[in-house]
Length: 293
Image (cartoon, rainbow, N blue to C red; front, side, top):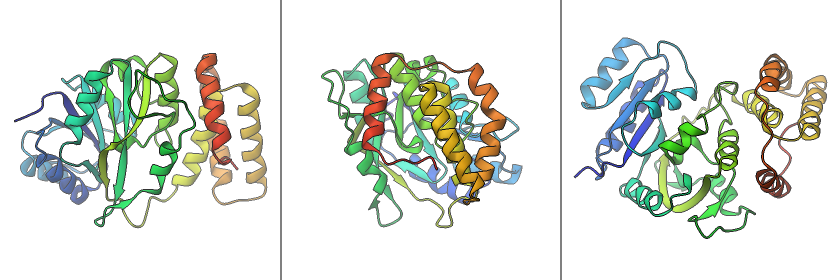
């Protein structure tokens, strides 16, 4: 029987075979979740293959590459109180969505649950799991798991009300490292963001990776600081990126160029974090290595 509380939102772009594998896995879940696929640019043949193979899946075609904003579109079109995110190379293990819904039911302040991720056919532990597991933020009695200010977008479940109230993923970032800003914005509105290792998602990424992702991550790390953090931190990060660009470090010039192009928009949309969230962000900063260089 369908659980009826969680929709799965999937964004995809030109990876039909991987998407079909994901939809097969989601279709086999005992929760029988409704699935919304946002197509960011596949050809019509691929879409027809999806519709034949995965009947009942709702496909949204915005007509352009919306990046992470496709998730915003999927949440707007969901009819359930909670939405789980998958990419076209990730899915959820049986029982995880019901467990997530139970936790969201039990903890009304909980806005987002981050899950443990297992990678590849062998189900290897994702090294990134160690980061939220070691979160320095103190436990909170009205939240499960460990409070965090970061997560993996393809392995999280959100409360629809909280996600939409926070504005979803920010258009200025588009895609790549967009999660931290959403965690900040949820926390700024009083919602809890927690890592819960009893929830598990599977991730089968392309072994070749995605070209050009590192400059985008650098760009978005700096832009996130300009959007929400104190100006000295933002200026310092931009200066370090400029030094890296002058030294011709790989990808740094592109990252700097794209950061500067988006900086006016970041200044217009700048909204510093409340003091309590800024304190939490600084605590997280002190436990993490410097990444913007």
